[in-house]
Each structure stands twice: as C-alpha cells, then as structure tokens.
Length: 143
Image (cartoon, rainbow, N blue to C red; front, side):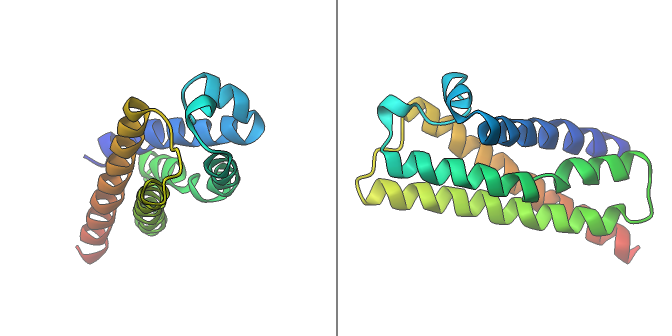
C-alpha cells in the first residue's frame, strides 16, 4: 500500500507542483494552457493573487512529491514528512477555495465557470490527499 500511495503522491503532487512552477516562470503560458484562470474572464486582482500564490506554492507544495519519494524509498522519516505535506495540502486547498468564494461574493470575476469547477475539484482532491495522508502517517507512527 505504501508504494501505491508513494506513486500517487509523487505523480499528483508532481503535476500540481509543475503547474505552480510553470505559473511562476511564465504565468501567461500557464493561462494559455488553462492551468490558470482565463485572463479575459478574470479581474486583474485575481490574476495578481494567483501569480503571487504560485510563487509561494513553489516553496510549500514540493512536500507532497518529496513525501512520495520518501515513501517509495522507505525512508524512516516518510511518516513525518507526510504529516507536513498532508497539513500543507489541507491548508492550501481550503485557503484557495475560500479565497475564490470570497472573490465571487465580492463580485470579482474569477474566470469561466467550467474552469472554476475544475479548480474546485482540484482543491477537493488536494484536501482528500492531505487528510488521507495524515491518517495513514499517524496510523504508521502509532503502530
């Protein structure tokens, strides 16, 4: 089970990290590829917030793929690293969701509806990954 979870963390976490890295290096390309909100459908405030969030995510979202690598090599610290990664993912997913809900509530254009559904789905997946990873890590630490 640990190997399967490790590959999931490395793959999904790696994809999400790559998207944030691309968004930090070339935000317009990330928008063009659909990884960031459509600039024609969003206010500049949201675009600026997303760009700055991508910078911060480079520092924080690396922990999930690192946890995956630690699980795959069965490093003794994988449960601790996984607790950190899970916590970060729960926080990031919830914060992104409420940030966008707040922007919507204030009438800020947040992009196309279909794109927002995909983004919210990614927040749900991130949150589930975080919660599952925390429980799995705690179960291992308590065994």
